[in-house]
Length: 275
Ligand SMILES: Nc1ncnc2c1ncn2[C@@H]1O[C@H](COP(=O)(O)OP(=O)(O)OP(=O)(O)O)[C@@H](O)[C@H]1O
Ligand SMILES: [Mg+2]
Image (cartoon, rainbow, N blue to C red):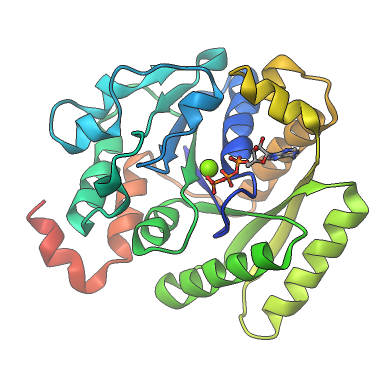
């Protein structure tokens, strides 16, 4: 079981689009997929997939149900943990509330091969702690200085705070491979001057109008337009991610999501023992 978080710092770079479509690509390959909308207070995964969940993460945080109870089923049988819409306190959770959410994943009853975590924008402690809980961190970047600066900040914080040094990079909304490679090279050069980390370009996704069309209609592009340029690129990206993961094998199940979260907290562990 692998947990992949999609982050990037900047808003609007395509984290949710790629999380939803990578989840669809893996589910289509018959993997057991769990997609977690970790933009907890501003749900978008369920909207993108045209789902109308009756319960969401706010019910779980409020102690009204288990995570199993809020899970909904999406394309090709993938399961989704939906976020809430406009519930501000979910964007400012205490450490113990974050731990309560992450620990809840250990109690999920069905097997999972791959879990994808769609992060909120920004570099709040909540975003950084949830990102760190995943074994594999994917940064979504665009050909835009603000996107590169924000992703630089995410890498810097994860390196300083948790000594994370392995990041997958996806360049989104580009014209072609050449553009993505040039954006990646620029980013890598800038980072390598200040931080010692390993960055791997895992793929690029072209700017493709079919993404907006499918999402407006409540579908993933992979499902609705499987032969669109972006669908083919995301399918290739999914394969590249799997190969990249094979270079850093891990043993263990979903409870490692929680263990990794705890491992980074050091001084705050006593507080969490009371969760
Ligand atoms: N490759 C692409 N081609 C065309 N449009 C895209 C592409 N990727 C994403 N978009 C569009 O960009 C917009 C932002 O995408 P998305 O919501 O996935 O970004 P995000 O990073 O999750 O944003 P936020 O930080 O607000 O959560 C959406 O309108 C989406 O349809
Ligand atoms: Mg999003």
